[in-house]
Image (cartoon, rainbow, N blue to C red; front, side, top):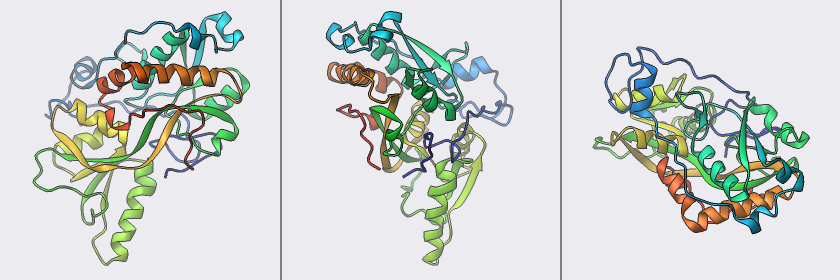
Amino acid sequence: MTRASTQGYRRSRRPRGAAARRMRMWGCLLVALALAVTGCVNNEERERANQVTPIDVDVQKVPQIAALVPPEIARTGRLVIGVNVPYQPNEFKGPDGRIIGYDVDLMNAVAKVLGLTPVYQESQFDTIIPSVQAGTYQVGMSSFTDTLEREKQVDFVTYYSAGVQWAQAADSDEDIDPSNACGKRVAVQTTTYEDTDEIPAKSAECKAKGLEPIDKVKFDSQDEAVNALILGRVDAMSADSPVTAYAIKRTNGKLRPAGEVFDSAPYGWAVRKGSSLAPAMQKAVQYLMDNGQYEEIAANWGLQEGMIDVSVINGAVS
């Protein structure tokens, strides 16, 4: 399992309460992933080649669910949501500067069911949960893993199951096994869980058995790690399951999963402890699950692997 902190974490964040990080600018060293060719491309061309288009699903307000929204929120007609970017494909900025992603599309649909207008406010990652507690934000949406420790501070509405997922080149003759990867070159994004915990632990097991350790190859951005795999500079890559699924989807058949998703835990939206907003949101996302819009959104982003059938309030496993 990934590391916990007092404020919250998501798997591919720096350990111990990391704040928002800015992705480094892509330059001539990067390759348009979908094209898998070297050279420079401008931002607009890159986005067209690599980015999934957000989806606006058809769903209407459900009065019996909307009635559960706290009166002070219902009166404003707005749902104020604290979010930290970038974290593709869950929440990041599109070419026009708007915050988009899988989480955003799903939250937009939930807000429709509740009859509210979502208002996304960019925030440092570490400040989101305290701001939910203080009432500055009504919801914290930043790929938070629901944990028992954090449930002491806020309530969580679960909507996805995320773990670690490896990928390899689709045309490779060898099936890479994450549990038996001694001697393999594995790309990771620097300071992620995969960099600081997962690969070092696996490599230590290799050395303890007298085998060659895993050659961990670190990159400043996940896109660089994906690009290295496409170009054959590494044998595999390790990342959060939604991140890997998104990379596989947008590289048009150049990558495939290596092994199964492991170390899974629920993602959840954070709301103020004891607020009736939690059951309102839980019933709203369950409505989307039962009526197909949830699957439609997940499929658009290539994230079907982590779909869940039942949303719960406070579903932490550890």
